[in-house]
Image (cartoon, rainbow, N blue to C red; front, side, top):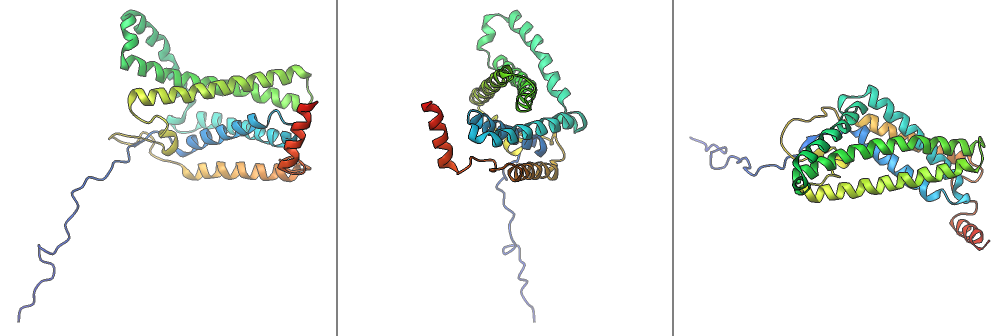
Length: 254
């Protein structure tokens, strides 16, 4: 008696021929992306809380958090993987002189060239990042010195000026990213979200180092929790949000 084979060619599963979407190449690791996000969030919170005495504890805590993140980025940029090195970023800015020479040699027609515009935009991005990291140093030092009463109101003026310059740099950075995304027809913000850029090829960053990124987040949360416990009224205003608004409104009337 013959039994039929249930695994005949007609009944065997057929592999799908639909191509799977490519993940793209990893070009930014998780610690670099996490620093970028946490530093931006801390600066936004510190900037918004800078003019309110009721939120001074939060402002100070976020300032110290920014200082810690900046120290990490410098250390990671020196001891970390090659793609995250600060030297790589600095070498990108060296191309500004060559780009300017090419622009002058080509003439006004180069201004309408897409490749020339993209090259100049990428150089501007690198310069902007270096400038914002450099601005963070006097911003944080002046804020710390004024908080510790190491000088007069001139320190507060410098701190406020550095904050405004940093905000201008952030807005210019975002605007440049938007313009380059439109010009290149490719999302230039995405690599700082998932670390990848579309296209075939090997990953430029072999290891994502997510554990180190998670440790950064945990350290920031622990610092803010400790700061909350140490402050007499926590990191918010005494009496809650309603008291903060009443306090600010009272100051404006005066």
